[in-house]
Image 1 (cartoon, rainbow over the protein chains, first blue to last red):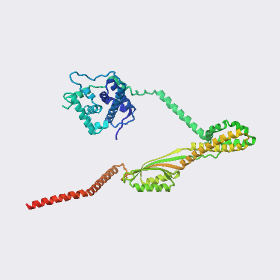
Image 2 (cartoon, helix red, strand yellow):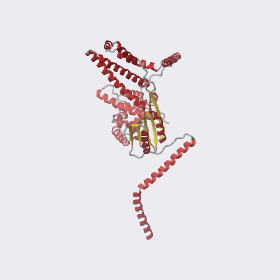
Image 3 (cartoon, rainbow over the protein chains, first blue to last red):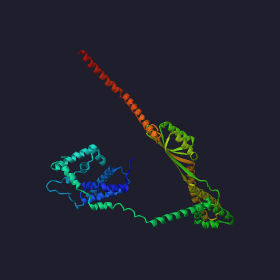
Image 4 (cartoon, chains in turn purple, red):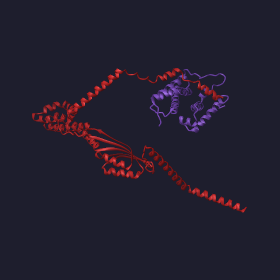
Length: 161
Length: 340
């Protein structure tokens, strides 16, 4: 029998396990720290408000990732409308070579999220497809195009070696 | 090499403590423990409330059911007698009319004994039935409904042109006194997976409607009597005003009573019919379970062979072509070998 987890239990579990994941995705998809923090907080508010019952930790994680990306999209739309030019902080500036993180962030939404989910979280293309609502083949092409774009930006490319 | 740098860089991103604090604060802290004396007081208060409620109920019952009716009609009586028309009534009443007036108020106060007192129960039921012979089940159910003088309110069939996995949903009305036997007969026709029978006591609302009708009818008669004696046009107009209002109320109440009667006389049954390839009776004992699993596997095996046979037959044209080609090739090879 599957045991479902929901409400405050899901919240405290997610808070212990996935706060960094949510924050990292938020940072990938927003332009500054304060937006990323707002989104992270909002994601957890949504988790508290939802009536959804989760099957397991992977289910929660996938849900959190999806919600985070969606909220970031909303946030960026709003920000671009308000044209806020406050604390836009580059994540880490390394003078000698272009920063990998900055380069990934500069990619378009689907590319950067696919890169993050595959290379950092270790999801397969099929799993990413499920999370982002796309076909496996589409995800694979995002991944390779994202890699190509990074190769152009960074010397040394973006390979396993 | 950049991939490793990327992972390292992401590793370095961690949610700041201040953010963690903010999120943690989203969940309200656990409730404080309620002191013992508060619990004791609450329990005592509940007990007292229950005792008062019970004594109230039994006290009420000793006054009889008609007592309740009086209470319900009291409000109605007030409305009609303290209406602006009261002046007209008083002016028009002569001594001989007093009897009519008294009759009227008697009815209003519910002392009239002709009000229904047997319980009015609305029964409803819901059934989920599985069958492996959908068509005969459906004809059977339709026959049963006719036999029981019932009727179908709503019926939906899904997948009806397929020969498997059909299901139907029916809302049926059956005379209330035959509900149980109808359900029993249906149960014997298929396998019931769930059965819910409920009832709702509408006696109070029914009596309320019935006695209001009675009161309004008496008032109508009285008004008609007064109308004949009315002298001034103003009186006639005000009486007519009241009369039309009484008539409208009467119509509405009668309609409501009719719908109550209908609800009481006919029980509504929701039937969910599902077609299955075979019905499995579940048995929880060791051998029962083993037998069930064994039967399942035998069934699956048979099904496999059946599918295989069907596919083989379906593939015959291809097999014929490939077979002919293979035969030709073999014959040619054999001849060549023989020549050597």
